[in-house]
Image (cartoon, rainbow, N blue to C red):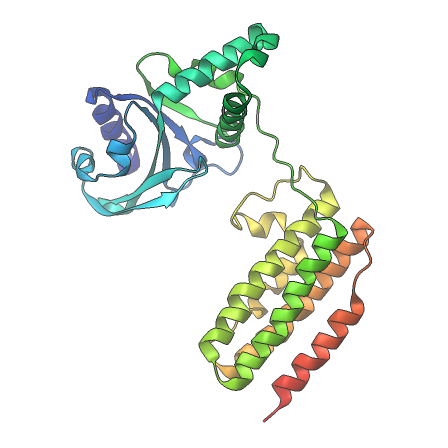
Amino acid sequence: MSAMEKLKQRIVAWADRTSDVRAVIVIGSRARVNDRPADEYSDLDLLLLADHPARYIHSEEWLDAIGTPVVTFLEGAISGSKERRVLFADALDVDFNFLPANQWRWLNRYMRLKSQSPFLTKLVPAKLRREIETGIAVLGSVVKRGYSVLLDKEGLTQQIPKIPPHRRMNLVPSEPEARNAIGDFWYHALWTAKKLRRGELLVAKHGVDGYLKMRLYRAAEILAVATYGPEYDTWHDLRFFEQWADPTTVANLPRLYAHYDEGEMNRALLATMSVYGRVTRDAFSRLGYQYPQAMEDEVTRLVRECLDRR
């Protein structure tokens, strides 16, 4: 048995003897079977239903009953609340997401009502109905790639198979929105060149390999959606970028980044501009938008002029 499996058993044993923890569900890569399943580097993502989630979000003492925590901190979760991330001994990392068990019970009741007498859901106050529907959509996005129930003390997870898979639709920007994004990139391309020429290398490094790169990767996502349709899976937070982005952009990645060196940043800035131009022109063409070529040409001229100054 692997160290992670042993840790998982300790978590289940702790939850089983902890009265207000009602269920433990594995989500994320360790619950996926066919769609990029876990490997030896994967963490363990857990969704725990508890009567008093704040007790575990805002304290750390309970972790000692599971293992030896080396690092723990709070981070925003997809539900809009906080998750507790923990690095245990032997480099075993676990993300603990907690949801109120009573909220889950209401969700179950609503789903049963919707499946049996959908017209009765109209009697639920509109605000509450929106909150519940939002919760179902969030849950659908969490479990759509797979889940595994480790513990369920009262059958709270019985409704999970009936949750409709959340269909994540990549929103294609309107033409004005796309032009605004392009303006953002080219404005900051020249802004970065000016910082570089002034000698503010750290600020310029962030511009080249931080701000501008994220604008490029968003453009690559738009190109992918424009090519394959709004349901094309671009994952999130650059996950598996090398698999879903266009091969030309992926092949260019090694030359787009710079060392902390003025000449290197000059080269990387121009390379990033070149790739961004190609990606956005292709995306605009596929979307039937009018690409602002004059903007790219003029800013490119100004950037080269700025970088050539001595």
